[in-house]
Image (cartoon, rainbow, N blue to C red):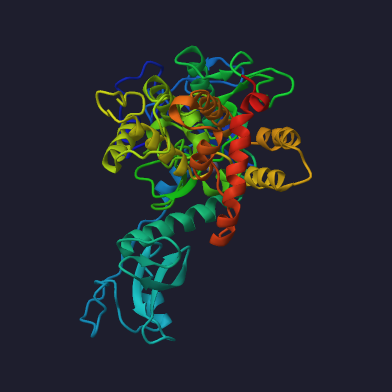
Length: 511
Ligand SMILES: [Zn+2]
Ligand SMILES: [Zn+2]
């Protein structure tokens, strides 16, 4: 939650609050939590009008599925400790120091003995200064007073100041962050250690939010469930539809990156404050979940991506995209195939001929900008080859190929076996194909059915399965073998795999 919003919570009744207000200053604590060491800590509710971010409604779903007031409750204990932490006090040098490095100001004292440092910092916790290192000629030491002792750190500068991994614009910020960490570690070491262990994911703020989102999805635009009506139920085909599988249930890991949060943020896993001034925690690049680094390690692979975090469609992970779009297959694929079948299926050399580069780029940009409303009609792109090329580009740019590297290996092994008949090879392909991640499986199945229809028109378009396989093998599958020679050798096997799958797609996937 941004600082501005937070301040509104603690200073006055929020403008849009519809539930009884319970800010930090005025609230009675909702509950008192007894810590392991026997001390009591208040947990107060900050959630009056809106939650900390995304403008989520404050009311969320409790574990029994009912809307509850003021849940999830962000725990402010660590925030209060951060507020109490000593503030940095620069001890300025009151005389001109010769050859002062340009990155330092008044806090730089040149050479000082340890006794002098202790004397200068005697004013109390938070006092700090920078001195020349006693041991190394071009090194500097940051001395900070905390808990009645002086702590010394080797200080570095590369355009930013740092003693560890975090980089700061000013020494003041570096010291402020250090003091927060010293103070919280001193006062709440045991508490911090147990943050992630003692939190229950089922009752985390993230789950509360996700359940609500899922419920809204089901009643609204809809989370597309894959029913047996949509996928074949023929007994001898690869069928991933039973029991009904929901796209939101596809496994997908979170993609966490260390985040410098601006303002006050709370962990979506343990509901505690994320302390410090920089790198307070991590944030998932796909769904926006924020957590302490330790807490993030406990999250299962249930990332529910949100389109607002996905900056572009081309080059984004397939599972991420279908989960965010709540569609069985990516909208890009669906729209391109529909357009190609509408006006290109009889065209000689369809998929073999390339469109104009600039037009392909324009299609790609249109999809990246607004996939649902992208116009790829004949009015806009007269040449259907442009759409075909854009579709192929989409598959080529997938970070994990449509036929994943693990499945690729198994399929190649099958077509290499000279002791098997074609029918036996096709039968053997069912197992590896069924192990594709669900989003990949359904998209591949959709593409094979489409390519089958293209083949049906081969008398006009001159594109039998063999020709389509030459075009699509390098687009839909790739090896993770870094040796370029291995790729050359594999090319003919890749084409054979594609040709067999296209020619036998009804045997493999049903109609
Ligand atoms: Zn995520
Ligand atoms: Zn946490």
